[in-house]
Length: 133
Image (tube, rainbow, N blue to C red; front, side, top):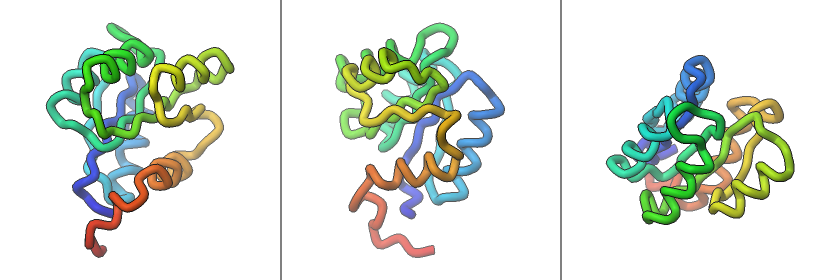
């Protein structure tokens, strides 16, 4: 895995933030975190991450609003965006995908390892930049 692939993990739950952060770092990604929507937007602008894992229910600005801002303002234009949340209603999934998320992951249905595997499947050739462990 190429350590130059930047992942921005956005969640207000510190336990989950740590758990996903550790799993992605162990899998060879460069990881940044944000604990609310405003922080997520600022980091997405400054870091231009390759991957954004975005929770929905957060203080200050929810994930749908963050996603809308990212798409409308062309922030991190090449980022693959995954909504990673416990909101699993069809309306929420449809809304997230309509706003421009590449995929919608319900936390309760996937282990952190499965989330990493799902992210890798979206990366394609970007992950094999002559990097060897």
